[in-house]
Image (cartoon, rainbow, N blue to C red):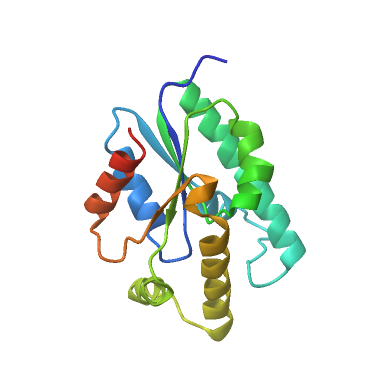
Length: 179
């Protein structure tokens, strides 16, 4: 495997944190950059898709498969000198179990976009995503889990991007990850 010269950014955060938007904007700062969304890979399931709010065991299995596919793709592109932005609401314990194993030896930069919950929910509403009670509760739980697990002590750059533009958020990521 040739040494990867560009970083692999793991952009985490709850729904509405701005992961995809920031990941795309971040990759535009590199000569070669790719955005890989775990959710997009999951949505490629044509038959038997397990929604996060439905069947927990099957949903968890499909997340593992999507993450594994995203990680494999990330390493292929990283070895071809691409900067990579992996977009996934991933907790530190899952990072340790899945990501770290496959990405060992790569230049990893972990970023948690952490706007307050009300800001994330407002962003989802702006996107037209229905705020059903189960969805709001799921988002609230995910927000709390990520805020607790993905701390700076675990080498996550934690950014409250609620009052930052996309470009300001990207600039902080670049500045604080020394890229």
